[in-house]
Image (cartoon, rainbow, N blue to C red; front, side):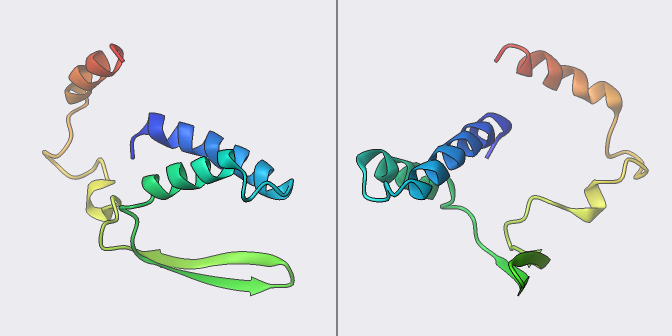
Length: 97
């Protein structure tokens, strides 16, 4: 899910929570939003460990075979993996969007 899709999904989630809070679970617009949100989550798999205590929810851990996070790739200290000049093409193409 890219940045723009994620922004749209966040807006839909806000509208969805508003509809549910106001009792419109079975309304056509809520059904549409459930479909949209469900579609955006088709590729999401994994496990989340939670602790629930006195109305608070704490995330203890999460793991997924499809995780995009790679601890080895987040360091800019690894030689040869990233050159700042490589970002120029990305910036130019993304600015056309």
